Length: 205
Image (cartoon, rainbow, N blue to C red; front, side, top):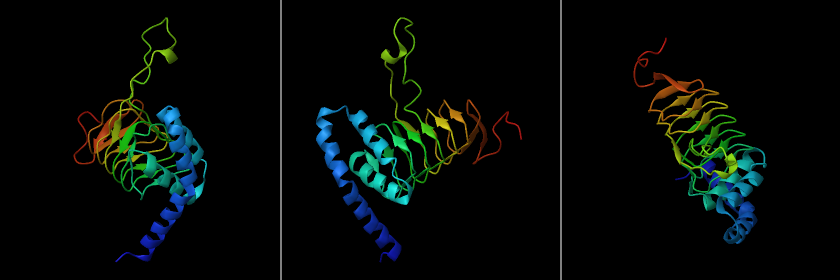
């Protein structure tokens, strides 16, 4: 038997879906004549401006309909933006305010502090040709993974895969894949400890 809290949440999710239905209709009408990720990012920017818990419910309702995957029990804070429709948000995720989420899969029970940036890999811009502007050289978008039950501190920048049960310190910059259970700090991010073992070799206490 469902609790009264679950019943209320289900009702609120229903109202949120009704609330975003005009935006969904407009999105699907514009989709055939628009660049898909550009259109998605534009709607994400508009929805990011709705404050409070109401804003999170509206964002979740919209993303559940248009994203590759978005669980209904997540929280997405004010000002947080998504740039790729192929992004996946699994269950129990908290995304703080002012985050910028690129092409990624965020697994269950992850926590992201304020101002976290998940980039679409680290090869988005080529710059080898000195005779061509960087903006015209293209690049490669890579879907990065943030492992289950990981916590990312405020202002961290992640451009590589992070394993499960990791802690990424505030302001850290992750440029290489991180094994599960790691505690990472610094720029560039270094593993200073593993939660499942002793200090990593060579790390200071």
